[in-house]
Length: 100
Image 1 (cartoon, one colour):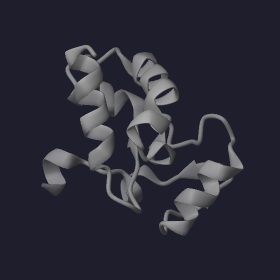
Image 2 (tube, rainbow, N blue to C red; image 1 turned 45 degrees about the vertical axis):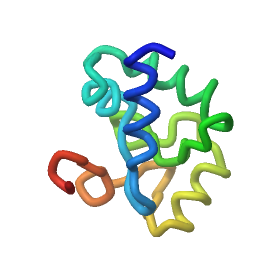
Image 3 (cartoon, one colour; image 1 turned 30 degrees about the vertical axis):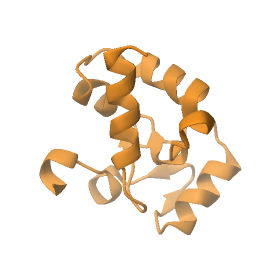
Image 4 (tube, rainbow, N blue to C red; image 1 turned 180 degrees about the vertical axis):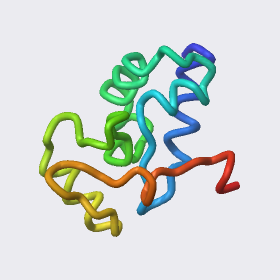
């Protein structure tokens, strides 16, 4: 596993229930500001193996990328308000550097 992949997995594990992070935000924190697509690949291929809270990762526009009912319901169960597949980032985005 590459250092970037390990960092991404570690960051995703820290997202608390009721909060979300964007692919790009995770990539930047892991050391690759332009690595959002790589974060998506890691999430897709390693979520089950590493038991990652994949549903807490969304697009930079605050949208559920795949319009997945499972993701929407999981977020709503945690208290995240989802309106037309969108999430208010100013209210629900997690910032580990600020929230620590």
